[in-house]
Amino acid sequence: MQLLFSFADKVFSGCLFSSTPVERQCLSSELCNSINHLVIRAFGSCFPVAMEVVELTKDNNKIWNVGLLLVATLVAAKLISALIIPRSKKRLPPTVSSLPVVGGLLRFMKGPIVMLREEYPKLGSVFTLNLLNKNITFLIGPEVSAHFFKAPESDLSQQEVYQFNVPTFGPGVVFDVDYSIRQEQFRFFTEALRVTKLKGYVEQMVTETEDYFAKWGDSGEVDLKYELEHVIILTASRCLLGEEVRNKLFDDVSALFHDLDNGMLPISVIFPYLPIPAHRRRDQARKKLADIFANIITSRKQTGKTQNDLLQCFIDSKYKDGRSTTESEVTGLLIAALFAGQHTSSITSTWSGAYLLRNPKFMSAVVDEQKNIMQKHGNKIDYDTLSEMEVLYRCIKEALRLHPPLIMLLRSSHSEFSVKTKEGIEYDIPKGHIVATSPAFANRLPHIYKDPDTYDPDRFAPGRDEDKAAGAFSYISFGGGRHGCLGEPFAYLQIKAIWSHLLRNFEMELVSPFPEIDWNAMVVGVKGKVMVRYKRRELAVN
Image 1 (cartoon, rainbow, N blue to C red):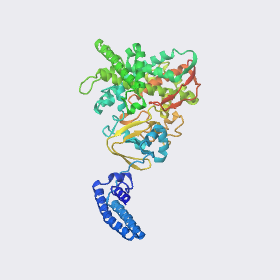
Image 2 (cartoon, rainbow, N blue to C red):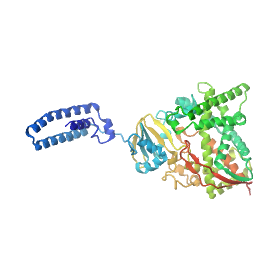
Image 3 (cartoon, rainbow, N blue to C red):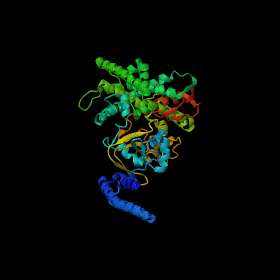
């Protein structure tokens, strides 16, 4: 009988008979307590009578009748609670099935893309993963991700989910400041990447590219991935960090950035201040970089010397209240800029080359485009000639569709919102959820892109425009909306400057297997070497 009392207590505290988790959450504690009290009173009145009957008569039929009475009481209470307690009207997304407590973490650790490939066909474009004490709700596809990209910071915030960047970027910048200050700092980036500035950067990109590949012989074999990583960091150093770093301090600064880079590990996302060797080297490198840039800033201010680089733009920037940027802020913004651009550009350059070398049709198309441009402009490469390279642009864009370096984008939900799937199903996303979308997965949705796993740059050509046909946020390699990548124009110019030089001056063939994806990296790139055999040439122009 004690077991029955325990059973009844669970029933009437709303823990057993509520038909859904939402109903259980919405039960009124006061109403449950009242029902519980009534049931215990009913059981209390029945129990002595039943025991007396059993003890006096020892009649099995009497025991059976008492049991039926108890069951009837429970059923009646269930019906009463169903009628009295209102059902929740929330339409929560389906949840990924997993083991209790750690199941969601285990699913996620297999790889988020693996998990998405398994769950999207079963659960659709909106679903929730319980990850330890957090709920992550995925929004996959343009039909449900518009709010993700367009919502104000007060509704969907970047700050909480990207706090792990603070030890690397430093205090007082980007994710360590209020949104109003962050907006102003992003304005500094925007002003530094205006067309007038970009035209000057292109000249520096071309110079660095020509100088670097002049060291190649007439023929040979190289690791294309290694070569592109190095020329990218050289051009980025010249355009972003300045002449002083590029000419005098490049090796020192590169080594320090390497320590910063290696200090951003998967464990850093959860425990960014964990006292491990990689984090200690990261913190030491950050301090040394701050000292280096403080000296450069002081020197420029004392001599009145200025340069056409991102460093100078940040030195000259002012907040709306008239305050100038501090040395610490300038250093942090430079680190953020280099981190945002270095990996993504080198990864995309490598994938672009690998796909062109594996697809003779598109390699011929980009070479023909170079010939046509050279007929019009000679050997000159500047902002205007790079802007005419539409075929090369589409080839880079397609490589980036297939392999976006950032495979997950995250926000923290500060208010409830609703989404509607392409099937017309509406879901309510609760306040407090982490909200995620995946460029790596969404960029390959078959209802948006024909043969989505095939490299086909012509899908972006006029007349097809597959990324536009399905509406906004169909192509999200650079994010979009309020938080779209500010460096997108810079990245395309940088990659086109490098590849236009290679196409004009070298014949190449891929001699290693087509590269695999390095899913273990924080910024997902190319796994292993990409060996290329080259031969120097002068592109013949008819």
